[in-house]
Image (cartoon, rainbow, N blue to C red):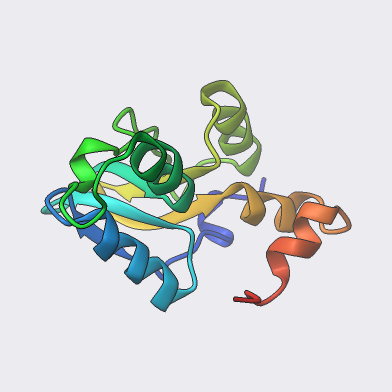
Length: 138
């Protein structure tokens, strides 16, 4: 059995729900990532992606300089343990229609596993794995 902990990302960027969309977008740009985990102390309260900023923020005419992450955060967060089976993580993503799962231990964020991570691990010859394994081009 391959566990989530064997290939999860531990280079995490977290932000507070009171941070603005602009701040999150700048952090994503500077860190070459597509999401930030929204936390309240040690607790994961949501995830915001670059797509969320575009679709839930900008497309809804929300001012990215004043709109807070709490206003657009996906709040029904499904988490996994580093000891969970990779197949189970894939099934959770499919069931809940998400592309990223925070990895927690005793309620504390320790990693993140993405659809791309799973593709690289489970189907290394797939197009998604190939794209996910490449360095960012932006």
